[in-house]
Image 1 (cartoon, one colour):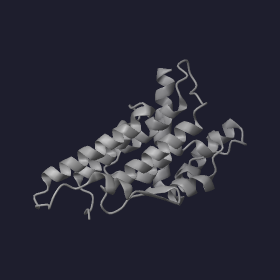
Image 2 (tube, helix red, strand yellow):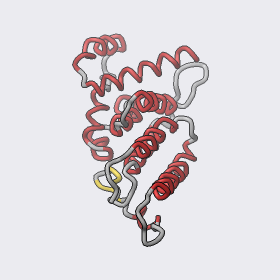
Image 3 (cartoon, one colour):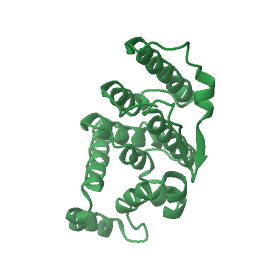
Image 4 (cartoon, rainbow, N blue to C red):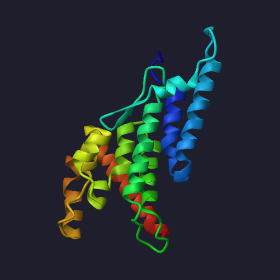
Length: 212
């Protein structure tokens, strides 16, 4: 069985989130497979304990299973792989739900670019990867903009993710000025993780205004 995640695992997980916004959606899954294979190879090279023979990769990958919408892995899998899969699952979910949505501005870039940027900001500024926070960053506008429900997110990604998304979701039935005022008024009542997510969202919005 694998031990607690070390620096290599944490770096691999952080890389998965930090680089995801630079990779086309069609290449994401293939890139994740390559990264995991590289991690396993590096683990073998660094292992000084004699082994009876090569470790088969295919059976280990087959240990992955779906439970309550969250992909779980067996003990024989790299510790970071579950985090990578959850982040990629959230990226795909967000890309599909926001497929018809574009950012405001002259470039009219796909909205998913904004979600990936927010997730990347959080991953790049954290010492340790908070997988659920990165997942929530990718999903943070799904309730507000594309009709997902808190219950749906909880079922697919877990209650912690759903709670984070709900914390940063505005009530679109209110006028825009009222929503903005409430954001300022309620900022101090949000959890530290939700505050970090809101801050990353605003930074990404300011960047977008400056460039487009």
